[in-house]
Image (spheres, rainbow, N blue to C red):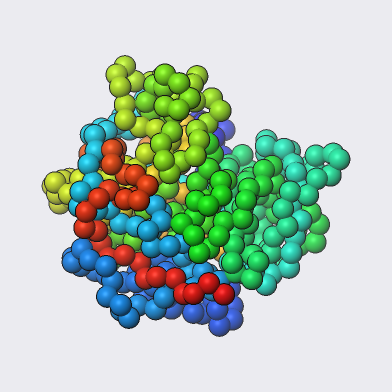
Length: 406
C-alpha cells in the first residue's frame, strides 16, 4: 500500500527512482517491435478501438514467448482476458470526494520487473520493512531469493511496496518478492518476503504473489511504457488497482474480506475494512471494477486523453483491487526495466501521479476526469474461475497463444 498522504512540507515523492540500463541485443529489440505492434502491451496483438469482439484470427499475430520477455500468462488469465458481454455487477459510485488536497488521484504504485534471465545472479537477503531498515540485513543473515539482476539496476530504499519480479530459470519463471531494494552491483540486495516462482506458461496465479494482502502476481497487470501512448484507445489488459479500504465491504468474518482471484486480504482487514461508509459496499480484495457498456464514455465529458484511455480500459478489461490505497486511488505501474511514469509524462505532458492540489492544469484535468470515471464504476458479481471477466462473447480480441513451452 502507499504511505498515507502528507502535507507538502513532509510529502515524499510517490515515484521512487527505479532504474535499469536500456535493454540491448536482439531480444530487447524484438520486444520493442512487438510492443509497437501491440499498441503498448508488450505482447503482440493490435486490434483497434472498434475491433469486433472476437478471438484474434489464427496467424494474425505472432505467438507470445515469455522467455523472450512477452506477456507471461495464458490468454485466459484474469490479468489478460477482456471482459465478456455478460459481465454483471453492482454500482460502486465511490472515491468521488475527499477533503484532503494532498491525496493523489491517481497514484502510481511502482512494481519492478526485470526480464533478462541471463543477467548476473544476486542474493536478496532478509531486511526490515521501514525505509531506514531496507538496507540492513536481519541477523543471522538469511538469503530469501536468488535472482538475475542486470548490472546498473537500482531500487532505492523507500517506504513504498516495491513488489518485484525477475525473469529467471532460462525464461521459464518469474521469481518474486517485496519490498525489493538494490543499491549496488556487487553486494547483497534486500527483501522482506520472497514468494514462489510464477510459471510463465500458467495463468499467473499458480503461486501466491507479492502484492499486499491479495497475493496477486508482480509481473502482470501493470501499466507499462507504451500502454497509454497518445492516439491509442487504452491499455489492452486488465489493470491492478489500489483503493482506500475504508470504503470496502464491512466484513462479518475473515472470508468476507476477499474474493477470487485474490488469495487473501490484509492482516488488519477486520479492523479497518469498511469503516468510512455508512452503508453496504460490494468492494473486497480481488474485486473486478469495470465501466458498463451502457455508459457512453463520450457522455462523461472527459477532456483528458489519458482519462479517456483509462475509461476505455475499464469498459473493455477492468481493474482488479489488489491492495489498500489508504486515502488514495492508484494503479500498479512498471518500473525497473520499463519506466511507465517517465514514458507517460514525456508523451502526455503531465505527471501520472497527480495530487488533488496540483497547479498543473493538464494534470488537474486528468485527475478531475478520473473522478468522473470512478463515480460510474461497477463491482463485478459474476467474475468467476472459468469465466474471468464475466461470461459471454469477449469485448476485445483475445491475446495470441503462447509458444510451446521449452
